[in-house]
Image (cartoon, rainbow, N blue to C red; front, side, top):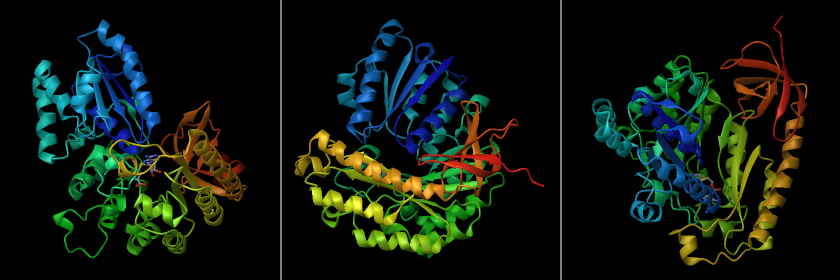
Length: 449
Ligand code: SAH
């Protein structure tokens, strides 16, 4: 019996897919890279912009024949396309799909399989998911146990959903309200990951720095709850590195920044989206801060965390964004010299405030021009920032091999390639940087005297 899980979208989806795969392996299925060979196909979907949604629809069309030929095989659609209430509409549109699973919740898949064939074991998966109320499955089914699925670096969701309601964003409508997972569940899962050989754990949330504020166990706590999570995961033997993302500027308290600086396993890397470099646009996005607030935050992060790298997200072509407002964003990127910027063209999403109340007035070509301009500016910045690493020593956690070279990331999330005979997978390599580009570095191993 074979399964195939196809995933697009954010890190949360990657984490959800790993849990589905782990559950299926518990039930005796093995992974295959070819959907056509699989008894169970799960498509884990993203609808944050139109483009990933179109990709899912394309994939569903391809699989229509597969289902016609093999009606006994199972096709499940999971993730943000399904959300919490799209199921009925999707059933009409894609009648060849057997199951519709909301984000982070494969319970219905287990129920279906329990009914069809694998009653007992699937029942335990359901019972366990329900007892946790978060439906992510047992803590010993976090990662698939098979050797092919081994990953050096794994994601651990700590906050599900989002309640912020930025005017452009569909995520709250699809992933539901914000809810934090209990501290002990997170620690148990981190221990499980470590026991499976995972070296780097990235804690996930839409607004990860809001972790715990909804949990009674943190009521009245003076320390930021995320700091407690970092401290607890830090204690786990085998875990070499810890990261967390995505942060919202308004929740980055000083004790969190200080914990990043003080805890050796926590990497000096902060992902904190600004989205736009103009106050009017930020207000219409309902982000809840000004450009100056963000400037001060960047200064505070840099001041408290020596050697930190900062990554951001930007949306260009938001409804009504003028040329001058766009240029403010461009100027801000030049000013802040951030270590990474993910730039997206605005995409109108169903139900959002922006779609209901604002005119998506910019053409695709105009949005694309703005995206390209920012991208080019950021590429120049990265080229310059990375050039500083030439001849420097860096520490890289090795994640795999590509085209005969090992690759991994520095603590500050820079991608580094190097050549070496021995098996470096999962080890930390000390490298001397011999070449730098905007997107990656090349290094050579340093032989200790
Ligand atoms: N919760 C995080 C990440 C959300 S999704 C946050 O609040 O920043 C990741 C990125 O997708 C966002 O940071 C944003 O830059 C982008 N994005 C979200 N909705 C979008 C939309 N409708 N059009 C274009 N980009 C969007």
